[in-house]
Length: 296
Image 1 (cartoon, rainbow, N blue to C red):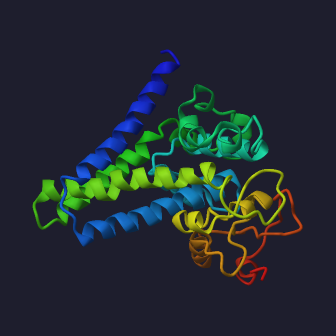
Image 2: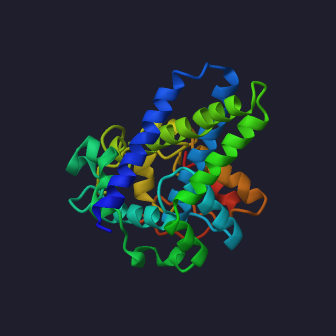
């Protein structure tokens, strides 16, 4: 099979999801319960992207035992953002070469549209170097998920479809398709576009608290939409910190949820933000230290 075929298939599937989500909205009557389904689904899917793909697998900002680790990987990949190992390895490259010519999605180097979305379909970025992600690549179950990255998102779609039909008061098929649109297709579309803004906008608009050698910015609006990822300059300064909103007023919902999970023993050894640490390689810390930590 030529290398262009998987590239084309990925592109057309991606476009089809966006078109289907937008068009079908005009054929489904609005209701507050559908909006609630969308909001709750968006919140948790975004959390798994930020807390899983990003803070855990890319930066090891906390620890998970093996079964919770597999569950986190599965839940991340329900968002349809490709394999867990590909995502983390690619993101590590971004930090290694941030805003240089080797950065895979720098708006400074390649403009808004490429950094926002087009880089995903560049053949050079469709593969990753396994050596960049050996820490998680040694787990066969994660390698399996990474290879069959379409499995978690299809299972999620099937669950949403079935539950929507079973609890509907307007017939199984009507409820199932409405749930699929609001609880899956529109959520995927929104999570795609919102999470991409960290690549395309958080290196252009916002404030720079720290000198990180790149154009990463803190953007409060993006932080709200992405559950804390918009505190991007903070993150680039101390990459492995579990907490990216370091001031008391910098809302970081991803950190708050991870802290709650730490109270029941699922999340362990959360790494703190250290101002004196410019490379982001920090020692472990107890959750209590992190919560009591706001720098101001």
